[in-house]
Length: 291
Image (cartoon, rainbow, N blue to C red):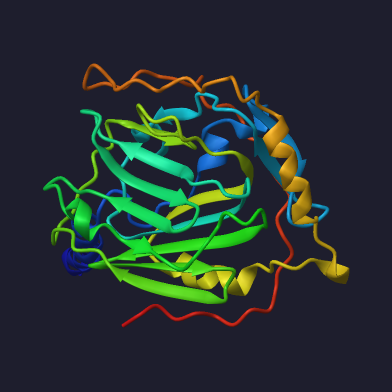
């Protein structure tokens, strides 16, 4: 009887062991708050607090190109997820065309990026070099450079990428990557800039989160609302002040390509992040992922 009981316990453990061995290291991982990881709450050079979408929300104004970067594996110790959601609440300087986030490999190859402006561009290159530049997704006809607050969700799954703006516009583009794409996590992740590029992000950012799986991108519209209680929202005209915060004669410093496989640690060790106020829950309908 005791032997049967012991065998029964072992059989119960088999599915668990098999499940653990077949599950990627990042599966089920918590979302990664990129702003906290890059120490935005501690207000590094070029970053200051600003009013968010609603009066209780905390945002960060980036007025000049600070060195806002960190080793990728510091944010994704188990590797970057194959399918993922990228969520952000952002307001750029009017007319801006610049990167919001860029991920580089240890060799300095640009693997992932989201470029805001008109149009919106999604950059992706896996370990096989796919997709090639002509096939990189471009969302023409969409603009995020109007000086207004926008909630943006990006869902990457399989061979497609979907862009959702303000829970109203949803556009899907092909993403012809390899069947088992891998992004090198031994490089660096950079906010608002690209290596050897003078275009830098200028504007306000309230949220920047990466979540394994695509469900978070579609559920974000159920949990958040662009408008605030009482119909109040900060006027986008105030965004014009970004033009006066940097002298026209000043040229932003260029970021240099890493010289070795191991990226330079450009930020201090992560500290205990401050908790920003969360926007009020809204009543937008849930968007379903494409079949």
